[in-house]
Image (cartoon, rainbow, N blue to C red; front, side, top):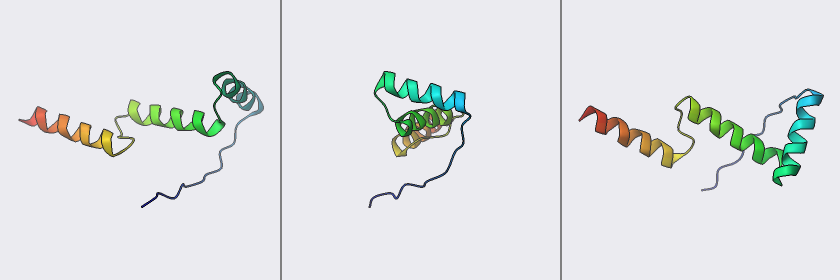
Length: 67
């Protein structure tokens, strides 16, 4: 089963968009790839699993601490 991407509109001020565009060029990445990385980092920072693999690791670590 393939997940259907959810689309949301995000507004950036001109300076931020210019900086993101330049960063994308420097790293040969799209704005979407930069956003994916940024949101994954934000979720990780707050301890929210990004995918099933992360969720399983977090669950296993919690069960080890309880034992």
